Image (tube, rainbow, N blue to C red; front, side, top):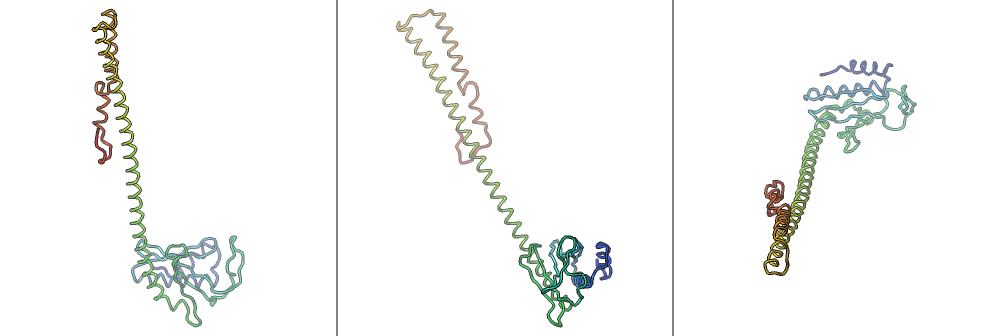
Length: 250
């Protein structure tokens, strides 16, 4: 939406609660002329006041570019809103420089300034065209940064996935080792029961038959209790779904 210079000036003057000084009015006129030039090309811009200073930006599609107009060279200053600002009685003829700040970080800036009799107002078309070019460059840069960020996130997620798989496989391997140890213990008990039985049959030991049978039942029951195949622990290894494809299931 196009705003007349007077409308912009009045809006900021109301925000400042005081009249805009001569340099401030010229800033607004330059910004307004630039916004009108951008508007004719289907773009936009806006300006606002903060802490007694005028801030502006160009809006090209979804891309915003900072705009800044500063005084060139030395000039008188006064403290306003806690900051040192140009003296309010400086004339409108005070030389200005306009800077495009694509990332609002004062990097990759492009600037123009009053040059003798050639004022910024006569460079509006050139500046508007440069803003559009800068916005396209900034847009391509943002796309590339988004792609790089997405790739970094993908790599990080894959790294975390691989780390989880390693942890899961280590836990699975430890479970296998635990099962193997339990199986050996169960087989040792069964072997012991069988050896004791043979010893008694061979006459190497003498023990009451009922006592032997009771002991054998208890011992074999204990072997079955810890046997990972008998009590089903081994099934947790066979039904596990989360392990690396490179790991061969037990």
